[in-house]
Length: 184
Image 1 (cartoon, helix red, strand yellow):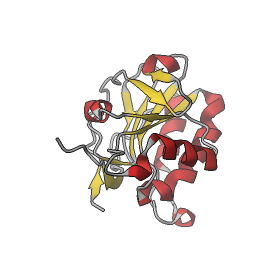
Image 2 (image 1 turned 180 degrees about the vertical axis):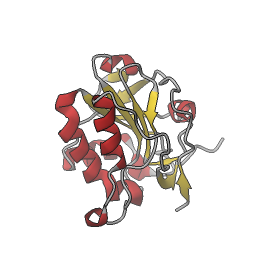
Image 3 (image 1 turned 45 degrees about the vertical axis):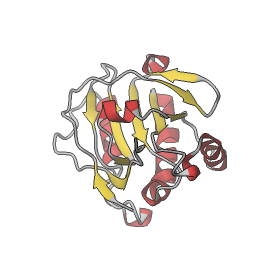
Image 4 (image 1 turned 120 degrees about the vertical axis):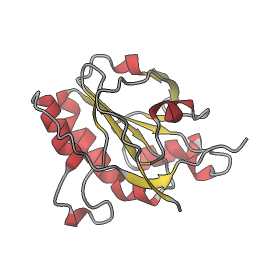
């Protein structure tokens, strides 16, 4: 497993639109969530140990902030042919087993992951109502041991954005497994 850190695009970068199919059988776009105050795009997958370790925290944060207009969107960019654990069928199973409260989309062309400059799973991008990048970093300070977390970076960023306060400019990259790019 290749450990990578997110690339940290500049704050203020506009969100890229997408048109991706979800496990719900519907096609989703950025516009599908235009009424939401905050969009959290998470490039994730089923098999990555880093995603598995933080998945409950992701779900809990979505549930905590859903009534405040915060919408998480999971996007799986991995090559499902070489990594069958990341297939659409397995995405449906993982989402059901974990009671996902957010859409889980598949990026089969990997075009959207490339547009966002995503490199790892999980890789997080948080956009305010203006759909400009406000946060792109880690979930918290201990991906491996939830009981040892002392700093909840993503939660603090969401609270600050909702309160119309500045989000810390110094943000610590997310880290995880490399995206499993298709070979040509």
